[in-house]
Image (cartoon, rainbow, N blue to C red):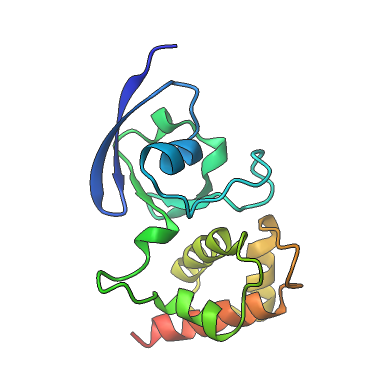
Length: 159
């Protein structure tokens, strides 16, 4: 199958990649852009590990073809950190609140949480749990993830 050019803005940087029309955005980010923080779990959009922001909204990158993202702004977990390499407030909250164990689900959780906080800067525990219903973690039981998201939201509000 012939590859076609796709123009993306990934983490603020313009990128032109050549992909087969059937290649997913998740695979394109990992293989063609070298951004391996976007994880692949189920590849059916159920687990949330591949969650990214597309034009500021959380989406499952395993369910999109790269060609569907032509000329859009894509933000991955790698794009959240400031230029100095420190962690974003939400990432720091995950670290401080022990909101991860193995870390596989963490990028998707953080990206979903960014979307939540954009919609609701002061989410309740219930609202966080409801928002994360599409993100699966097999390690933590979610308690510290919820705590981290609430702490990160408070830190982001205080910026």
